[in-house]
Length: 245
Image (cartoon, rainbow, N blue to C red; front, side, top):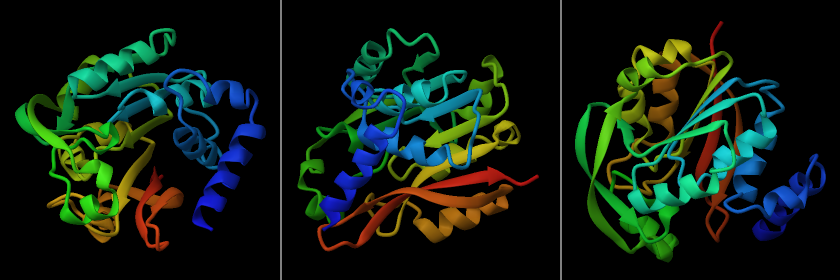
């Protein structure tokens, strides 16, 4: 039943949008990212800047360029091989500018767990629970990646409001926000993935993240996507917040 509803939701996105399936079939495009942004458009009519942190292969960046054609997109992806794919997939999209490093609470170099299933790569190790629930995430190897504070990065970038900060960094979201103390005043919308069970060792779960971003001055708008287990347990959810007026 869960698969049926996911297929039905995807079909609505594909066949009730301006370009339909032709866009979804493009190199690097993703039904999941397109669906998330389709849902976001109910609450965000316009975006001029998007910070895509945890850009992976460019799925979200490509969907953003389509849904918000006036937006400048800054995409951050630390894994070298995945970054090359990101560059390739977005090479014909002038709005996308890509950076090959992670964002976190400090500048430096960190151990990073590159995953054979690239979506699961993280600065945190995949938990035993995730390896059980999603066996394809079990194969990881450690690499070194550069990490920078958002506060230092944004000094060299041009942000035009409204600005969306999207975080999909597999349990490292709070670390990114800890390095953005000054930057957040320029963020109008915050979209991030949070877990209800520990998918990564040491990651903060929903309650902690929700309380933290509220203290940072954001108010909850809506969930825009979720991940369920085979038993329909909600494991993770993409949540949309807006800066309080």
